[in-house]
Amino acid sequence: MLRRIGVSWSFASMSKLKVGFVGVGRMGANMARRLADLGYEVSAIYDHHHPIAEAMAGELGAKAAETLAEVTAAADVIFTVVTDDAAMDEIFHGEDSLLVGAEGKTFINCATVSPESHEKAAAAAQKAGAGTLAASMASSITQAREGTLYLMVGGDKETFEKHEQLLKDISSSLKFIGPVGNAANIKALVNMVMNINTAALAEGLGLGESLGIDLGMLREIFSQTGANSRVLETDGDDMVLRDHDCFFSAAHAAKDSGIANGIAKKSGVPVPLSEATESQYRKLINLGLGDLDKSAIAELTFPGRAGATATEK
Image (cartoon, rainbow, N blue to C red):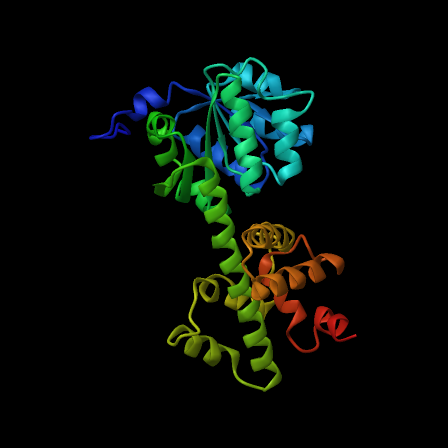
């Protein structure tokens, strides 16, 4: 029933692959659940916080690996979903490395990290005889669980085609975008614009609140004019209701804006709006609100809220 017609790799053949995961936070855990639901063997799971790996491994019937090398040994394809450049460097270049015994394996690196970090990992993997894809995700937790990720994949075209069915099984939109570094560059631009839009929406709604304007009416008008955005759909209500349950944290928004700003600096392109947005998210972190959703940036712009009061001081 799940066999797909017109593709070179059927589900039946791809599901025989053993899949490992390194990093099972909100995104990695739900990607693993999705693949397990489809019949893939999730063979090994590793997380820096071992109890998290143990819990996920117990849920999926996988091995909770004590070392990164154990994941590589147990899997054909290893998804990595780590937090930042330092974590990426650790898993590929540390004393305990995924590259031990990696010949013939494929790494699909999904973290939002710098282009240099992706390129460094890919070069090291190639030297070890392994393949690498950078699979940047413009999606959130729900899409990871449902297999409807928006994936932008960079790397070797042959490696991409070999694993295209696997990637399709976790995505609703899949784009091959060329070299490994392209994935990180484009993801940085996506998140740069998204974060700017989020900051702008928080300011518009906060100013509307201070003027005594009905915010339901204002959001409707925004949605029908040039003020419309995807962020208005996803975050507008949450900003007003102060519902900041985390789908994409303010801390990650600060990190990702920082990546984009670093790329811009190297390219000699001024990005004052993105720099201001990063500054706002770093204020949230300093206020102890970095673990809230990115919509919490409204706490800095709505009158009478603690963050806005702190900012005024």
